[in-house]
Image (cartoon, rainbow, N blue to C red; front, side, top):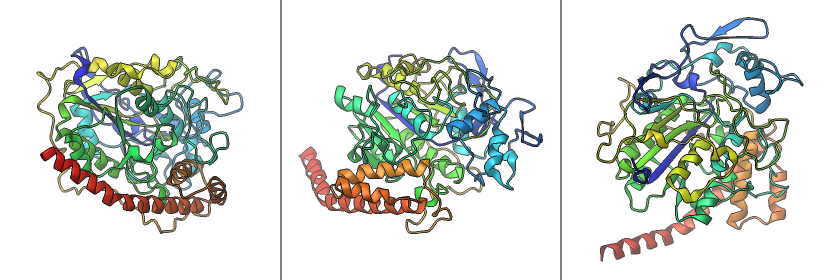
Length: 505
């Protein structure tokens, strides 16, 4: 099949869940891309166990809660303990074998009196009905790994730039680029957004679940490149003329509720809200004019501290763009994450055992649109998805469901946004890595609004000493953004009216 038949690449990236945790207890079978019978590698028969510090064994079981009582650790050093079963000063990936034995050890540091076995659990079949249907109807990739054994931000950087600028850890300060507050992360070879803008005739759009998408951290993203996601508007856009080539979709992170709301699938939020977002995105594309020329890649940024039984591979290409930090050479992948590839040009019930990481998205974009080129050695040598598209428009699937069925008696689980003025129980705590990232995005938007001089911006952000302070600042910037967009709305409406009138003349 000519790859030119695919015109639009959609990517929905959710948060912090491992493959075993989300899909491991669902029986997914079919055929591999060659047509040979295949079964997805889920939780192994008999399960798997981890020990806590007292030697108590906890087994994998299909009893995952919709809301975790505590956020599992998933920073770089936490993942080192989860994979190696230890995190001493001499324990590293080049000195200690990966055993996937430290997940309970890691989780018990935050679990308190909550059940420690939750970190080993998976969702029973039907618990996440929409994702389950897509995994069984389309292509499940059971060897998609996060790009490094670490947290959200550097893994998202790999998808957007093929690199995390040499660091496997979360940026820890608000002034994250050479002390230049309000700046975005730059990369030696650019980002996918900057490359599309400056070196191609292609176009992209970012759908954001709230005002502060994490893609706003990277160079090449302006506020005007983003659109607030809503189900009806997204569905209309998918059928409209001029749909961009690359469509990146971010969830609502629940920043004003300490991540307990939103639809990102963050562990302390209700995972069913993310399942509803998956349904909304799929149905918006499936019912649109773009469906037969599109692919939707549904992935998660990293494993979030949840157990997975597959040892992630090492020996992968390092990016090679900048010197690595923290004695990590970037030849080790992170844990498996759920990954489903959806297109009418892929046979139903495909099981793909190919090894991917997040730079496989960049490799796929390059295979479809060669002028994009490559960014680092990691994405240059990454496996792309092109071998999956074995159907042509003439033989494309016509049996893909227009809507995903809800379980009998269930009600849709939509986002439950937190009141922006509400207090949160951790307001007095010092800001964490997540707050730092969102404040950095807000500072960038703030600097570009024209409302903040550099000295005033530095002073304002310097006043952020707690999570509550961070949320207050995000509220301020959100209000400024709303005011600016409200002032622009009448002029935008007039332009659209003139455009419609001209088209109808």
